[in-house]
Image (cartoon, rainbow, N blue to C red; front, side):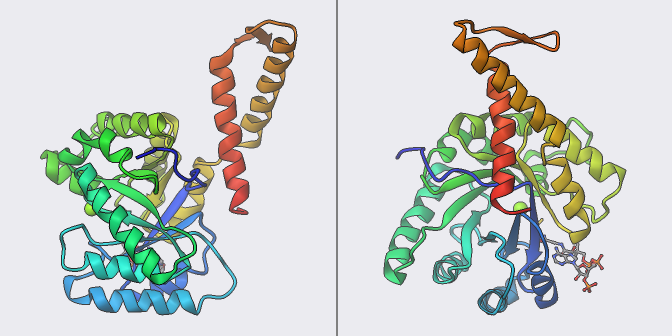
Length: 299
Ligand code: COA
Ligand code: MG
């Protein structure tokens, strides 16, 4: 299958919300955030999956005003809930993507892709659902390249730390650099396949210095955004993943200097005492693309 799927949009901050909690679902739908991820999986008790689906569908169909992108984390392929989750998402036009958890191989993605093809045709759904892949096991990491290329619906790769720690046998307390190899692998594959790289949630509800350090570390590596678990974390996360005006202005100056150089027939030019070549132009274009995606969602 081709890897040229829909172009990724802004996912600086994605708020995870248990779909079984009516109060949190209603609260989330009133918030300014790049994406809301309603959870039907591990944030919902096994006995409440059907109820969670119906709370979600009823809240979405009666929502007025805001139109934030809505994603739904379905239950893993092979569970008794996965099929009903997929059918509920296909039937609800407010939902734009599904997050598939615990993806371990490209066949997990192929299964969801074909299921969606049939369900969308049956429901005459206008806009195909996008797929976001949650990588949270040794198998998932090992097979990541094939997974990322398994469907044109895929827009994002997300790292899930809690299950990954369990799968790898990571010991607590986790050190700051413990996740670096996994982060680097996910980021590399995301860049190689044109997908968004989304950092997993910091599992404490606070939004203090430790949270900020966690965000800054992943943003500096090059991640496009992060999941958060509490409304109090949205503004800090959104700010950390938004290119500041000075960075945007500098990117514009770099591209303008490079264009001017090309018109003179040179590939390397100097700006403010720094040598510029195509490598810096690539980074500058990425900053402008991130800024444009941000404008798209009107935040
Ligand atoms: N989405 C929407 N609203 C949320 C929220 C969330 N993720 N987390 C908290 N809130 C709301 C609460 O309902 C409360 O609203 P209220 O003042 O109108 O009652 C307010 O924000 C303050 O919440 P607080 O009391 O600080 O937290 P809590 O004890 O109610 O909830 C958690 C703490 C961790 C259970 C909650 O943040 C949560 O469920 N997070 C998401 C968990 C999840 O999705 N896990 C799976 C993916 S990792
Ligand atoms: Mg998980």
